[in-house]
Picture: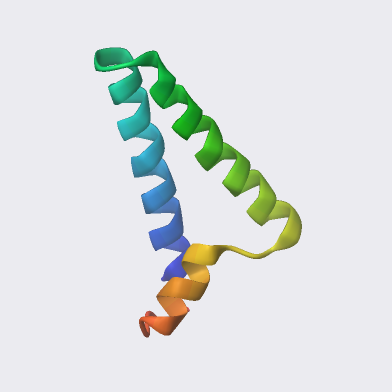
Length: 61
C-alpha cells in the first residue's frame, strides 16, 4: 500500500511541476529534478522519508 502511495505522490509532483513549468515559470523544473533525485536516492539507499511518515500515520505496508 505504501509503495503505491509513494509512487502516486511522486508522479503527481512531477506532473504538477511540469505543468507549472510550462504555464507559470520554467524554474519549476528544479522541483521536477528534486523529485527525480529523491527517487534515485531511494532506489540506491532503500530509504524513503515518505515511507517513514506513512508508517507513523499507520498506513499498512
